[in-house]
Length: 321
Image (cartoon, rainbow, N blue to C red; front, side):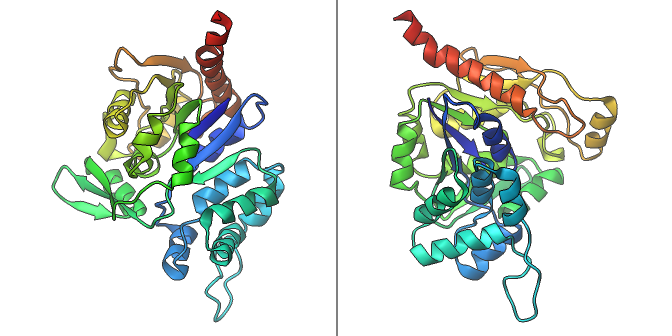
């Protein structure tokens, strides 16, 4: 099965790491390209290259020996006097240099994939430069991934998000998406990792070509005071409105961690994300995905839940015949 996973940040690499050992899946990561923070943002500003960080993390997750590769490529170079390259990760610099050398970001990613022996493809949703912008319920607005996150964490309610300037999907990536058997969205920061992908011109049209299910992996927690009361149903409504296509399945956590862990996150105004009133067309798949003290999905359990949905919905039809 040719499956597309949409997102960025830490959520997408974790999902890919859990799915990559399934021999029945051909994996594709469609990655957000609007990272304005840290090494990625600095390279974007200094060298004029696309932000490499999320692409690099996904390639590492799909690599043959992720532990060794991470140790080398995620190490930061020492800051040297008169050197602008200090403080960046080796992998970010490598990808940026490959992009500068080839002049084509897709070629640079393919080179990195070959180097790492990746099991799957990594696609940037666009190769055009843009920033994520948000308007809040108090009328204020802000620009940049870090700033948008900070605004809603401080208690401002996001009313709408958009890209400036408006950018288009890469035609090769659009064609790849139409050939997916299913689309998996999340987990990840809703307004800065997930929504920006679907705001790119052409993504909604490409998704219309996906014959199988659109699956949303609901986050374990809300993301600060500006998302108080936010539910999986709210996420579904925003995504459906943006891509003009129904979300068929929501995978959600049904059991929380210890009271101590919840109390620790409550200090940051992060609460367990509840399903809410989901539409009738949306199948809910619940599971115990939060098994540790840190808010991360249990990889094997999440991979099994996704496989159960895909096999039932995509292979079941063949059995009927």
